[in-house]
Length: 128
Image (cartoon, rainbow, N blue to C red; front, side, top):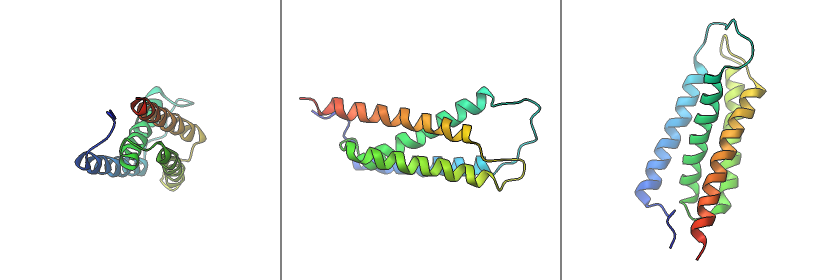
């Protein structure tokens, strides 16, 4: 029995959450912040980047795979990574913000973690 299969209603809800998260990421990336006196990246930023892209990738994976097809997880990863790169590019045009490879790596970590969990759950539910 496949416990990961999602109903049409759940998939639609997942698309709504995915779009909401993408818009939220765009909005937060549009905000200007005063220059920070510290160097490096703070723990709040680490949690934000990993977390927001974890959830974006998770809901995008659910939306695409519907809980039954591992094949579309790669597409979900590619789309999420593309959005992470475009987000950083977008930030480079916002006053007081800049594009950061560190942020892209943190985003990628969240994306890969989420996709691994979804793939594992689908694989596990396929077992007889």
